[in-house]
Length: 230
Image (cartoon, rainbow, N blue to C red; front, side, top):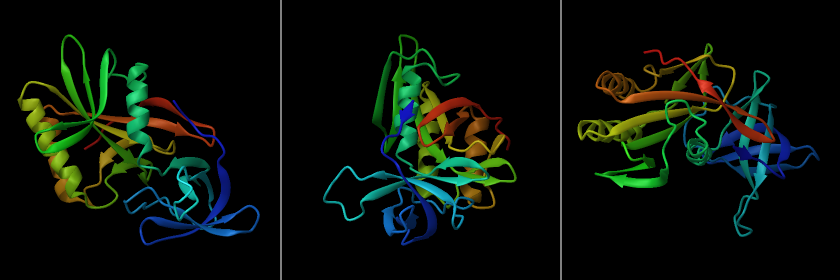
């Protein structure tokens, strides 16, 4: 679904200032790359782990590379938080996400009330708002979200609850960008308020879809839905 080209290989040194990462390239050069992830990246920061970087599209940008993935537990973990929205929309167009098939109108970044959701999908029978979250946290084989306190994520849950009450379909799609996990759960020990809200809206009918994908230096491909455990 997502293909990579012209990636540069290196080794992880450290992350700093939240959006910067230091990497040692195969030629020995140490460079600073953009980190496209505002989370804590807990369980994804391993010194000397293999990484892949993509070239910056803007030649004027200060950092020449963007960090895309890191190898943890012998499998690749997708770091870039801009990937899930693109992937999800394309996967839905190809009916590749179980439960989200059959929509002939799919749009990205659609506003509803005081929120902007990642995807709006519709057909002759229903309308559906979908918020997509990137999941990288692994704790004992369980994929978890969030990896840091998220007030924005909490706001999305509350607005999706309104969507559901208005009679439309509302979905939280958690895109799990790692294969060394076998279930999904809210990270109550990291953000208890978000976790409690997620469990509450799930009981009220908000659909929770934790969808696992396989990340490689060549592409990102769909796998299957993981069990949602509260």
